[in-house]
Each structure stands twice: as structure tokens, then as C-alpha cells.
Image 1 (spheres, rainbow, N blue to C red):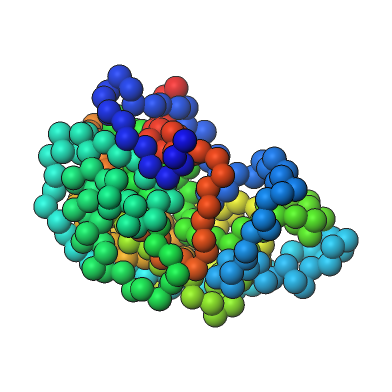
Image 2: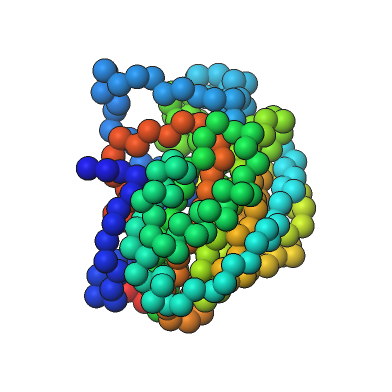
Length: 290
């Protein structure tokens, strides 16, 4: 089975729908993973994704997690606004992409996605080793959410697991200090959405707050940001926006019914090799009324 692209017919009857819980984990599940086979090669941890903050925490868990002053620059730039596609163009585009290398994505994509990818290709910075594409086509009723959370978060967070994390009482921790204060260039992103009826919301000005260096989820960060109520904007229809791993954003519930194509290009030094399929769930929408 191919884990990086899936060709399928999208209809109202086949749209996957799940109950919205608000607990959906971004950037990796908090559940314990199945142990890696002994024969599997050890993952290569590049500096961009190294949880360097953990180096200061002993394996016996004797040091409590410290706070630090976190400043999010919140890069958000509208690079291009393309013609808004028809609902039928979106519905029939037909291909979902999951961490798909750019060249493969362009070859496999439907006509609409391919046009967007060609536009994105000309906007890439080109200073990272790899470019991967995620995309999904979803049909929303009013109130539906594209992911199982509306929390403010950043993409490409540095996720840590293992004995040092377990000694601190967690299965997973996001190393926020390493992402924000290490000086290592974070992943770069280009994001597209075909319509505005279920638009991602982005913070558009710098935000400073006190956070734990290591966080198990984005609940506390979300509460801090909602209290600060920073300037923010909903992504325009058919636009390509530039962000990075320090750009706070969140999903919001759909304001109307209709199909939406969402595409994200990731420039990263981390090589992604999928060993299981998650692509089938990409198109799921989450409904609070269930």
C-alpha cells in the first residue's frame, strides 16, 4: 500500500465524520507507540528537531520543568491569491497527499492541486533538504471542524519521547524552548485553502508569554493566547500563505456548508519515512453535535 497518496471519489455519502472532542493531539499522539522492530534503523534526529532542552533534565526526573519567556514572531504573509475554484473542481480533484515528496505530489495530484503546487514551487525558500506535501478534501456542514481541536498551536513542534520524558511523568513532551530559543531555523510552510467557509486563523503580530520549557499539549498555551487576544486574521479563500514553526494558528468551525481543499508544503531537514498509513483519516471532519 502507498502511504503518501490516495486517489478516491469524494461524495457527501462517503465523507468521513467523527465526534468532535477538542482533545485531538497535534504533532503526534500522546498514546504510547508500538515498539519499533529491532531490525528497524534508528531514526536520524536533525538539529531542527532535536529536543535540546531535555539535555538539562536528569533521567531520574528530579528536576521540575522550568518556565521561560517565549516570544512568537508569528510570521504570516499572503504570497499569492489564486482564482477561487468551483465546488465541483474541489470535489472532483480526487487525491489526498500525506508527507508526499513534492515531485511525487505534482505527478499524482489532481488538476486543481497540481496548479496550486506549481504556484507553491516558485515560492519555496530552498534552504532545507526536503519538501513534503499534505493535502485533503473535506465537506463541511456549519459547525464542523477540520481537525479534532481548535487550540492555538504551532506546526512542526519538537516532540520528545523516551526515558527522560517518562521520568517527568509524560509519554510525550513538546520542547518549546528548543524551538523558540535554540537559534535553529524551524521548518518553513506554505498553506493553501480553496474557500473561506472553514478558514484557519493566524496570529499576525508578535506575542510574548511565560510557558513551561516542555509542554505535554497545547492546552496551557491556548489559554494564555486566548487571554491575550492578539491580532489575528482568517486565511483568505484561494490564498497561499507563508508561515513557519513559530507561527501560532488554530482551526475554527465552518461557518457554512461546502467542499474545501487544503494543501500544505513543508520545507524541512527531517527526512520522513512513513511506516504506517494515516492517510485514510485525513479527510475526516469533526462534528460537535454527534
